[in-house]
Length: 375
Image (cartoon, rainbow, N blue to C red; front, side, top):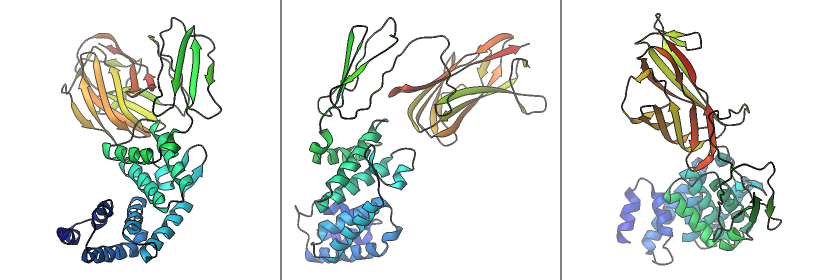
């Protein structure tokens, strides 16, 4: 503790250190001279409260409640600010409790996950905010259904929160049952012993499928049917994920001109391919497989990591086309571009393009190819 005074005097972020030290305040006592220094710093942070994010406000609230007695001015300020934060929350019975700054973003990230767990911990300190804590947990679990929590650090924060509130989280599990062509499928949302996936091999998909539930509680589930086809379906729904590609060639005016069925290319013409992804929400761990026409040879044949507009991806150059791997693709319209050279005469097909999320295979999209004529 002797070094603690010097550390908090020169550290760039005193609040983070004070918060971390508060986790052991009951196990290791702090000398009065250090307590005075901490209270001085807390007082300065409370004067600048309006400038802080939700995450830093939660850290300040928890630090004040752990260091100060219940009759202390900092403890009372912490309770007042916590109540103010609670009144700003968005609450509903389906999705749980969250705050506008977090709910408006595409997805939970490291900061927002830790912010929610810090707020839940702050409400835990009061001992009388069970409904609010339950709502935060429900929101975190609903977000987890999309893919995963961002980092090991944020996952540890969420798991710690779930562990302390096991009775709330586990509740009464819901089991779903279905029988397809005399094959039984069963899944459960029991966090401790449930099975989230069940599969069967079918020769033909039935016209109707019935799904039964074990009780009256709500449960989310999906039934996916995977099959092979030479002509994958292309959705026309505006709210669904879409992928397409368009080819352009460099004309005599040194301008990019769109390639269509009447376009006649020549050997050594430069062709640019633009892949367009229209995503209604952020995508995680994305694989894109694009088939290249046999007449097109890559200008740059090296496989490497590249940066597009708003996201990065790894480009893998193959004999039959390109493969792209992206950790995340933002919502909205995103593009990938590359250039090739025309190398052979004839009629060629630039094959279809497919997108799929590796950890959510039901999230996928397909696009058609383009016919090329070279003389």
